[in-house]
Image (cartoon, rainbow over all chains, first blue to last red; front, side):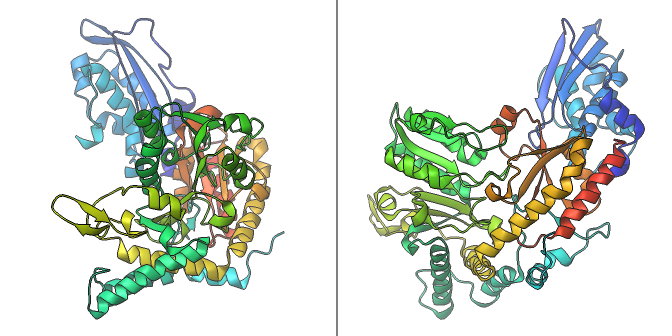
Length: 129
Length: 414
């Protein structure tokens, strides 16, 4: 697990991309991981069915925050309906290394919140689908 | 330096088979999470094994030999626990754990005794299990909740205690904070609560494993604890209650064993303690908790306390050099008022990441809110790492923790 914390992960943790808030988000969602208290909020600016802009905010471990940061880069310009159908693979490909079962929920929190924002209701855990 | 590595400690470590078992990475198991649950000595494991192999039978009604033995051992364990806390056996009610014991009091006593306008006084240190039941009681009865504040060091602020005690019907207070290790000054608080006319419940889940407890000297009306944090099995806990209070309380759960006589239309109830023990009890685990108590008595609670105090002092000494590197230690940094718990954060390494990195070295710590979310919010911590000690821990375990912190610093390029 300690080899998870490579330079680009630490960089996304310490310098998260698309971090903050949108003035007038057209969709948003927020959730916590009740096991550990990690919290993430996602705000989307959707235009003509495309994710024109995204911001995330929250607090938590390097896995949850770096995964969310990388996810925001992956989804900019994506069709909202495609974002709603994203699987856990998008996160696993972003981090590029195996995540231990005890930390999988940390990695998936951002994606779950994004999918919740996209479908307008609370989405399931991507790693359980 | 402290001479912890004596022959007694070596013998104690040898009593815990799990500590001799390396992790899947081939590391020595460094178990620093006893505040979550303790490890079990051979004597406890063997007691469970012997019950199931030699005399597994239901208690109280069987006339045959193994049923009589099961009953004797079950009630014998109750007597051992009663002696351990200086109570009468009738005052020792078996529950699943401390949480269930608190809920028993909440439903059977508080829901009947409290009325609109009454005050429940608790503290800002409490575990969710000594807070949420009282929130529900307040909703049911119209009582209100009030809190003894905690200061930045994690100690209770007693300056306004007399004002806080005004109108208080119930004081529900922890003996030891599971998050910070703070030992609450019960000997100063309980007499004043008693004078104010309050009924007193002490959450001893983190107290009785580490400190000698005499419920009569303490003058608690209720003292609750879990077996699994004091070398016993999971699934067995205790509600101690003063006899007169327990006599006056209605049953909590209804069913077999708790009755005296049943007709189709009505029932009368059994004597204490069985009035509160509906259904077949957790026989094996109760008997094994009796063994755990004997084990602790053999060690001596004074030795347990001294050992943990020395270990905590050693830990604070080893961690001090890290403070200039961003290590923040929470809670009272005074082993004389703290049990064997160290809560901390290290620079910008999140507690969960720290726990994962330590895990690769075989070191078990806890990370998160420790079931004290209001305390975490008040202190402004989103999560902390927590190392907690017990009878089998050594300075070598603390040294491993320190090495683990150095590794975390390398991984996070601090």
